[in-house]
Length: 182
Ligand SMILES: Cc1cc2nc3c(=O)[nH]c(=O)nc-3n(C[C@H](O)[C@H](O)[C@H](O)COP(=O)(O)O)c2cc1C
Image (cartoon, rainbow, N blue to C red; front, top):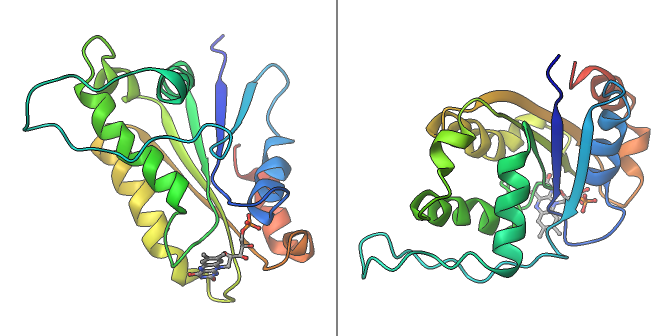
């Protein structure tokens, strides 16, 4: 029997937001025995990403929060990006985390590309807009990133809300959350 380990990466810039609420609703339905690790990207700030791919050949430094996030990413079978919709795409902390994937691809010994392949990438997002189509840039970012790394694409769970807690009144989102990971 294969055990799955879900890594939930929270990318909101506030606590108790709609995105986390929606992600937790979905996670409640995970089968018993499924691993869950929740990391808030605000607790693990990453430095500005520097693209050194074609520069001096120095490998990226894998210390501190970068090392923590790399280890968490590589040990998960399923990576869930829980980012609010900010300007139609992912939040800054989420985007920075994704930019660091580019450095991790170059990190000696990390074997990032091979180890990411076969994992599943999921997205969870809350947005204030009534039209879910406006979240397509976020969905496309995640979907194409999954494809680039040979990951399976699980899809995006969308919920509507502006103030924290609003998403709980989006009954359609709650229904989608119940079956999202199944
Ligand atoms: C910087 C910023 C940008 C936002 N951009 C959008 C947007 O492009 N489209 C939208 O529908 N809502 C947008 N919103 C509203 C948030 O998506 C909404 O309040 C959401 O519930 C926030 O998620 P959270 O509660 O998990 O923090 C934005 C909010 C902020 C603070």
